[in-house]
Image (cartoon, rainbow, N blue to C red; front, side):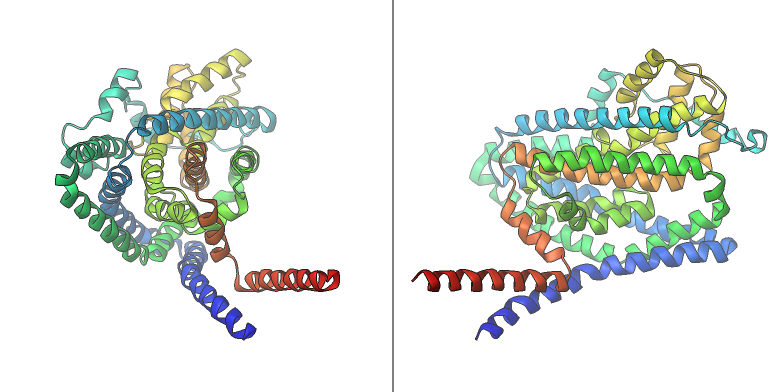
Length: 458
């Protein structure tokens, strides 16, 4: 009888694990195959880029309706609109604290490790045309522009262009109107709930093509730049990734400790979107899967659907760290020694300029070029970064994703709406069957000891 009970509980968990891990396995295989193919057949590998582009276009196709539907259902479905302002304020406060620490770590890493000192790449052979084009890109960072950019002139235009913040603003007002109308708006809310369910199933279908997109993205990157580029830029790549890891293992781990969420368990929960973010260097590719994972992790739908898209404009931890690091790198390459006051001023400038420009192509390099130009620094360092921007983007995009996932748990915990029981069940489902079996055996041993003690006392 005991064996049948354990088997009935244990076998479904194995099946769930195998089902959930299948996509991760295929993504890993595609990543390894793409690196190998890009190394052995670079001429053919560069032609694989359309595979990645097709997958990213498929993801962009689902993001806007998915965010709109989930946010409307999350806010109007709960009927609690009073807390929306508090959630927004707490979200922005956390974003500013997290990005400030990211900037500080980037600043310290650049000063201690000096990635640009003694850089031996021949700058004369690097094309400056792309950098000159970036200098011509004008981005308005004024508060009035950011405020105006929040409100869409047309929701259809915002949906077509994928303007996440504009979609969020429209969805909030739409949800408030549904709550105000009351029972008469019930058919609209039911329709949005059905749309939400359909979009999550749609997302599941699109994710079947993720290994194809991963293979195309990584093989084209290696094929275009060659494996040798990793050794030429080894110091810069190493310092960048080390800084990102330090940020994750200090700031993000401390945040998880404070809110009593296991950092390792959260990483297991978002392993698939993290792999997508790393291999495609695209936050959009990972967003739908990350939102789904965080809901399963115990964060309410209304918080996930508000914090995640907002975070991709205001909480780019990896990007802000990278910008500080590479700004000082560009100064070090040409032998310019910036004093402490200048570095702090650059950090404060990046705190503002790194926000609100998510739709600009090569956004990090555009912001970096504008920052260098503002402070009268040569932009030749940006030309150096062009060669490995994709490789560096893989790391910073992954940290952006992890940082935003943690932000949803922080806001949910702050609002006392985080479901720890749901989190524990989800973490348990992500563990290996062997580990689960060990836990079951440990529980049985403890139960036997308890029964034995009770029998002894009697």
